[in-house]
Length: 387
Ligand SMILES: Cc1cc2nc3c(=O)[nH]c(=O)nc-3n(C[C@H](O)[C@H](O)[C@H](O)COP(=O)(O)O)c2cc1C
Image (cartoon, rainbow, N blue to C red; front, side, top):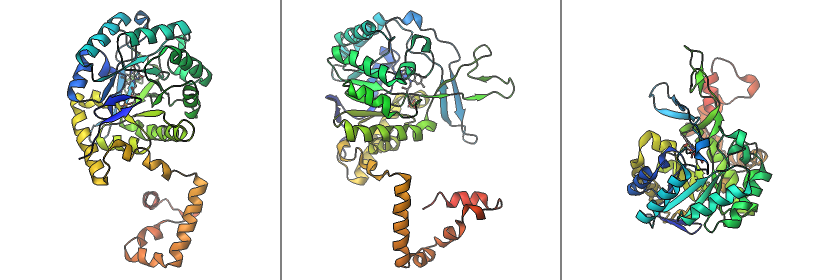
């Protein structure tokens, strides 16, 4: 039976499933519930020193559903960080650590571009016993006028400087959470790692407009008739999150060995988690999934990840973390590799064998782009998605 327990930056967790910062970690009650249900760690909703400056609107979510099954696969939010007071949070962190001394509680913090503010929030949170920090450099909406969240996270110089301020006073592990709303996520990632961050978390939500209501002609979510671009999450963002995690994990492997990665974005099953781990994640966070399915979802996730590990003979997370990174190449390399493979196949008369095995239909189907006709366009596209 696979062993899912893992130690990341010295933090001992029963499994790699972490509640991502957001509504599922919005107060001590729900954080306690997450620990009781068996989550490996919890990252609380992002906090700041001056909660009174944080003013939310309603509705603040809009959801995209599949046409047929009506399942939610995309979720936009325009929710800000926590509007609960900093002092209340300190009390709740303390009481949580008193009640769950062995469980990992991570404070997500965000502040203005001022050294004194970042040092104060870091010192006060660690004094009440949280186990680690996640620096929110990544919330895509709200608070840009205060240069907070992704307004800071898109600027590698600022990320480097602010991470340095925190590292000077932090006595516990620090992860920096990255925004995908940049061209090269490696730039802010390297900046945080250069300043000594112990790990990276990625991704936060993707800047989005969920849709326009065709009756009212108003975009969603609609607040008194108006909206503002928000952050996109849920199943639909998983491919983008996996790509970002692959890039970050490759950078860590090549330039910052020993630093860690917490993968986030569209995770809902143990198999989703396995994919993030195969691409180099040490832990896997879930936020929107919990809003869809509740805290109990961790149990089937644990079961499915264990089954996957047993099937492949992996005893621990270490046995397969980053295994699939080796299979990424440049497109030019793919062309070379395929030319070589095709030449070998030809030499061995593999085409004949493939035809016998029933692959012939696909080979006939794949034509040069110039020969495509509109009649069998869908079949052509389908054939190109097979090997
Ligand atoms: C409603 C909502 C609120 C969120 N609030 C925060 C937050 O306060 N701090 C933060 O770092 N990320 C926040 N996030 C981002 C999530 O932690 C996560 O990075 C993102 O949603 C992608 O993961 P998911 O698909 O599992 O939700 C929020 C996400 C949602 C949907």
